[in-house]
Length: 448
Image 1 (tube, helix red, strand yellow):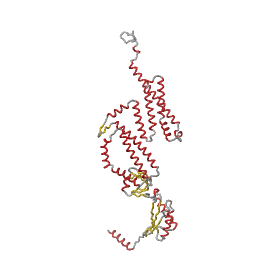
Image 2 (image 1 turned 180 degrees about the horizontal axis):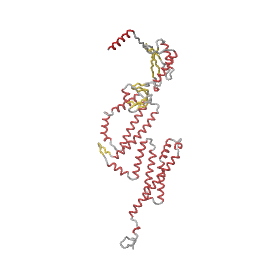
Image 3 (image 1 turned 90 degrees about the horizontal axis):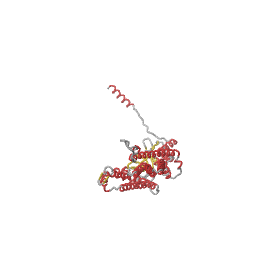
Image 4 (image 1 turned 90 degrees about the vertical axis):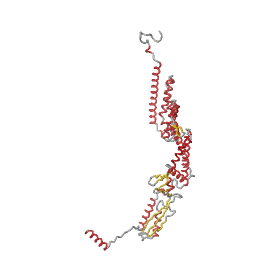
């Protein structure tokens, strides 16, 4: 009879409905296997999320890491931030080990892929988390995990081949999406590394007591410029760009510098000149046009001037070379201020000079040496005009306020000594002839 069943007339063989077609069985099993893997992965994700949330709520990281070195505090913060991913990897690994023990290791490939992807993300997040710049951190983490995911799934080489298949030739340079992506990522990484290194070296230069402030700023700017130039050259040479193919772009840049960027180049060169000749330096008190304040910082193209009002003016470096600049603390920090006043002709000018000099010394910021001096300047229309000169050492704290203090001290001293400060008096005299002339004009106007 055979094993295929017995025919019952024209119907199908008896027992045929109990058998499954091999291809349909495989499809059904594959579908169930996929659903099972997705369910296990979802369960692991839920458990990991809840466990990480409860742990973060109960753990006080600041109190726990108090007194730890900065590096260990950063590592602890990164571990707590990625705790959910770490727990997810552990749970998936336990599930995968359970399937191996039940002899289902060949049927649960998705668990292995999920565990590999999660492990790659944890490692990348911990390593890239040491980068303080958030933009660079996100860029490095996303790029590294994308490459790792494509490699784990076996799609890295096909993706690179596809991105390299579309090309545009510009001046002998073959530009492809793959080249653009590689160049952009390498440029950002090398520029970040150059800025980090230049910041570290700049702090070391600023801490050197043997260098003047202007030389410190000059060395810092030169180091940053050289490191950024090297970073760009390294990134371009790493991706295989031939610099001779950029001759067209360099010519265009030269034309742009000659026309559109001449002000930028002028400010850049002026900044280097200012730092080299030390005409102004951070901390100097200067006046440029209507701007008075102290030099806060010197950039590549502009200099920051901080005023007493708290405002900060960004003045192009070219203005310091082409315009008249008053540096109140160029050779030393002692500044002489003048104050003018007048007294009545009934006063003794010798006594006035003595009182003025003694009153000036009572101001807090006025220097005793050089001593204040007072000179009779002129015989005015209604007063004896004097000039009072005194010195201060801290112009960065303002000059108008100390001049006001000195004038108030003079006012108190003159009031105490009974010295009169005159003011113009005008006498208006109306004669009888002027009255009669005015009356005649009024009468003529009335008749008209």
